[in-house]
Amino acid sequence: MHEYSIVQSMLDLCEKHSKGKAVEKVAVKIGKMSGIEPHFLKESFEVFKEDTVCHDAVMEMELIDITIECQKCKEVSKVDNFNFYCPLCESGDTKVLTGQEMHIDYIVLKEDG
Ligand SMILES: [Zn+2]
Image (cartoon, rainbow, N blue to C red):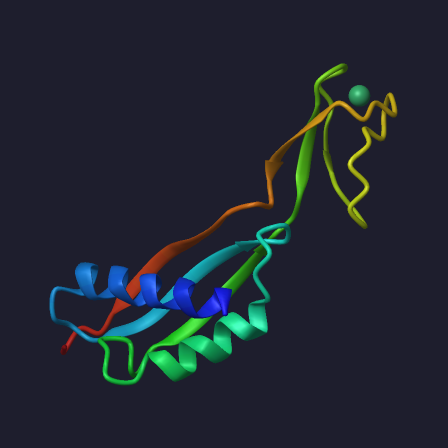
C-alpha cells in the first residue's frame, strides 16, 4: 500500500536525523489532497516503528487545507468539497497552492537516548 512506503521513508529520515537517539515524537503535515489516508498512515507507522529509533514515538498529524490562487483575479481561497473554482470571479483557471504536500514537520528526540 501507498502509506507503507511513505512510512518506510519517514522512518529512514528519522533514523538519519536521530543520530542513534530514540525518537519521542514525529510531527507530520498531510495535505488534504495528498491522497494519504491519515489513519492508514498512523496504522502503518505503528506497525513499522518496531525495531527502529521510533519504537516509542508517537505520530502527530496536522491536516493542511487545500488553497488555490485564481490566475485571473489573484484571489487566494480555501477549497471546500473539491470545488476548484474561484469564489470571487468564478474562474476555473486556478492554481493549487497547498494541500498536495506530505512531509515531516519536526522530530522530537528523547534526551536520555
Ligand atoms: Zn478569481
